[in-house]
Amino acid sequence: MAMGRTQDRPTLRMVAKEAGVSVATVSYVLSGRHRSHTIKDSTADRVREAATRLGYRRNDAARAIRTGKSDLVLLSLSVLADPWSQAVAATVSTAVAPYGKTALIVADGDWRTVLSNRTPDVIFIDSVSADPEQIAELEAFAAQGVQIVAFSETLEPRGFDVIRSGAEPRCHLAVEHLLEHHDRVGALTSRTSGFARFDAYLNTLRAAGKPILEDDIEIFERHPEGAYRAAMALLSKPDRPTAIYCTTDFAAIAVVRAAHRLRIDVPRDLAVVGVGNTPEGEHLDPSLSTVGPVGFNEALARIIVGRLTDREGAPGEVFDFPWQLIVRDSSKVVPG
Image (cartoon, rainbow, N blue to C red; front, side):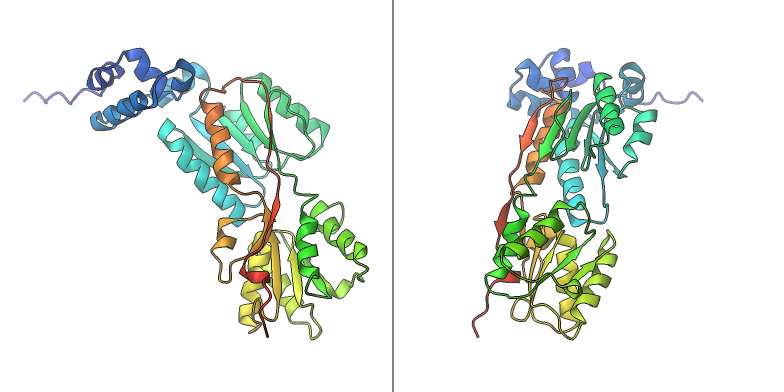
């Protein structure tokens, strides 16, 4: 008995007919390049809806062979367990999905291995050092057509985009805020040498004429569990500070959780401020005071989507996101 012929796979031509547009328009929309061809958003929406109804899927394997790209947006994140990293990954993944892109998350430094095997459409690197060899690598990949968005306070754009936060001059605001109502401000930091966020703590205490006490400072390993252990050690001391400045939000969150375990009331008995302005900190109980950019994740997603569409191949630009102090419940003064 002859087997029945399976249904033909939907084609660009079929999607074009369904949406009432040309095949070229469908190609531009589904490749994410429609913005550079003045195609209306309403038309692009109609094309995507038609593709969804027909169950159209692009032949990504063929495209990868033809273009050398893999429809991936690579996110190189320093601390994968950091709530900031998780929020960035979630926001970018949601933003690029309508363009048929998949966000691939790798640990810090692993982007080199990925780029040696495949070519993502865009790569975001959340920490770039001043190492000349690393900068030369970025320039070489950009020259090969890789769309790069790099986070650096000092790097200049050289064929790729650079995001700056202005974090260093703003972290002192957190320490100054705590010193308004506390004589002793402790610190939880991942390192003490050559670290601008910790230098802001030292310099602000010195400017206020406050002593720097070794017992008020704890160094944590760069993950939430390490931060929690350091927080427990600091808060368990019989003569602990009444306010703590943390160089990341996840360390500040660890301090709040350690305080809960030790039955220390935040903010009545302990004020806490972090760095980064992560969504998890905002939704913590009590909500976390912090210094950081406002709306950063959404802005980053827009920059990456722009590189996917109308800014593909554009010269590198600098995007500056100044930080500010955001006072929430964890450091508010409680009467009485």
